[in-house]
Image (tube, rainbow, N blue to C red):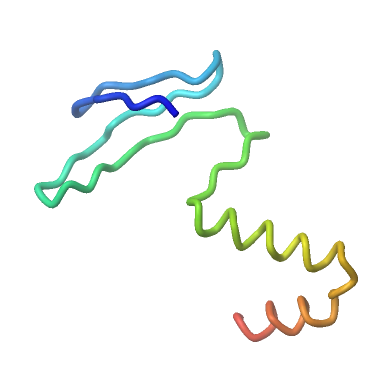
Amino acid sequence: MIVLRRTLGQAIHIGDDIRIVVTETEKNGRVHLGIEAPDEISIHRLEIYEKIQAENFAAINGNILDWLKEISNEE
């Protein structure tokens, strides 16, 4: 893991195609980030990514009925 310090308006690049910019900082320590990436790259918060992975795992492993029940209850 690399740890970088950036201030408002500063950015980092990942490869040639991904740019992350600090767009806002709050007194409580929260940081708002803007992410520029090609459309084919999915960007998710970690908790959403983990949920997608769990749903995909359940579907692949034959638990499709349980998975369908779970997603229908969320709507």
